[in-house]
Length: 207
Image 1 (cartoon, rainbow, N blue to C red):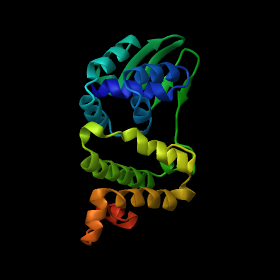
Image 2 (tube, helix red, strand yellow):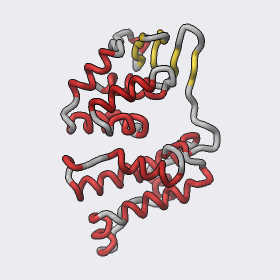
Image 3 (spheres, rainbow, N blue to C red):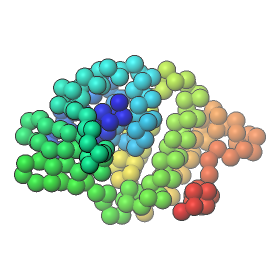
Image 4 (cartoon, rainbow, N blue to C red):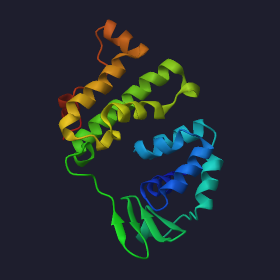
């Protein structure tokens, strides 16, 4: 299932077929396209899809888009794709090969995504918010896409495409949202921290 999720997520990033993948996912669950564009943890995506009870529908969509699992050790983590005018492979490093040219999607210089430390810290905060919010509303009522939309509305870009110059502002925005959850407010009233600072995070993970 995680290979299928990777296949669909990479398909979304490909301008040639992204529209069709997005449409198919949206017909299954309106939250899915945004989640696959923003969530980098494939295991977490699988858990969310399982909680929504739409695994079979997602698998069928992948099959409709000519998904086929690879077994060769030479192409580990590479997913075959053929459809429309695109033929080739989609790999986990988001490289798309067509009959005309190869397009490699790289993080724009100066974006959050271009700095591993900054990207991982922001993702850590986002995951922390989702954890606290899920404790508040329950798994069945959790909508992960809402917060990603809030970030995009606030900063005008997908969370990892926000300029590095706005890193502090973005981190503060997410931290404030964590503090505003029921669990966050309870922890603050007890003097307990709800998240690590950027420096603490770097030290903890030995960057």
